[in-house]
Image (cartoon, rainbow, N blue to C red; front, side):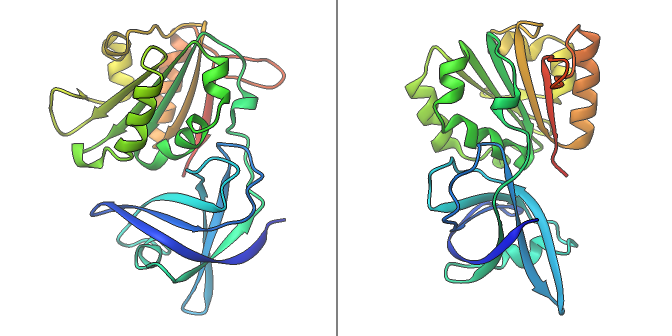
Length: 246
């Protein structure tokens, strides 16, 4: 059962009109990258809480959460109104099994995300484990509009630090531009465009982690299975590991 403490908001980053990050005090830093916590607020005398993946790596004294503002949502509008010095209830310890220690070894690690589903992958990439275990890492971030491509400075650090090992591939469904692919992740895989842009194959030598929109997860998983990849299970290791993000 989760415990709760009242956490002070350290900072807020507004990425776009409906995208923001909250950094809150969080001394419970012994967790595994990819895990989640819950944020909660009392609204109209009722406790509202939701689970969110941690963006920050283990060992920090804060928790960073990447959120989408849902205009008619029960919690996100109140979270979006928080500013530095405000307080929010935070659960501990972190939990969840969408972690690299649940993933078998492989040559290439594909991290496929949409929207705020990139969050757990940012936490993983800020640890030594993926860089030590995989020869190549491909981070794919799918969004609707180009302004929704976030965490650019952090991703640029990894591009500079691991130029031969790391490839970042942004995907935008409703814009077109030279520095990203236009379309949706499943269709780009089916058309081989994602593999060509990343210069990496998608086969049984890879490990694929998928997080984000449920429709994207379902379509991509079905497609990958038709290509010969299998869902990763503890009793039967495979190549596809998914997180049902919402």
